[in-house]
Length: 263
Ligand SMILES: [Zn+2]
Ligand SMILES: [Zn+2]
Image (cartoon, rainbow, N blue to C red):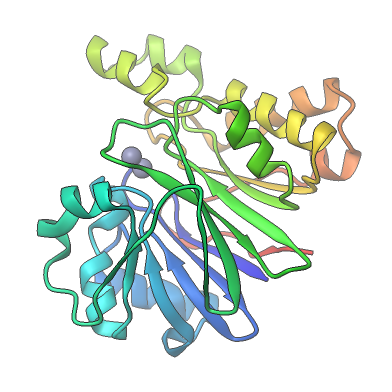
């Protein structure tokens, strides 16, 4: 299984998960044109894509979901709450919607997909674990906290795209109005670099985690060097496997990132 980030940040998120030349798109927060361009950049044939999965209704995740589902003629998977909040933005879905429930799994594009709940200020947000049978990977962004049940689900994953949205120091010293700062740092907001570091260390010590890519970075309250540095230094202090410390990658906000080969 390979995962490509097409964009990762508050101005748009989309990931392609590929297995045996079959694929699915997780979130589509870019224009249809940009999504097709990014797929070409990473060498994924749009004809491989069999479904669009949506995590929640925020624009940076759904802006292009309706357009791309019409263009590729594929269904959209999401929770009922996300559907109720996003129906208008999505527009007509000729191949329909498939309502999923968090905590359940389904099969699509030769992958077993599990939806798990996240803590975010949206109607019924989830993210997903993807399994080939032999290997598992997950995306965890747009969450303000990580519960024991989320950790338990993620512990089986070999690779993780993990939110490192902000440096807490930059956020609180920065230009955002106070209510927005509080929202971002809340349990329904976004993960900080320090939270990401603790989650990665725990999943490496108690689970199967071997590779991590940091995503959904803020343009205002973080920098790629700071995110990588905070997480890698913490992992090194916790005596996490050297391979994991060395391989902490940061996903670019507006362009495709390095391939995540899950093995
Ligand atoms: Zn987001
Ligand atoms: Zn969000």
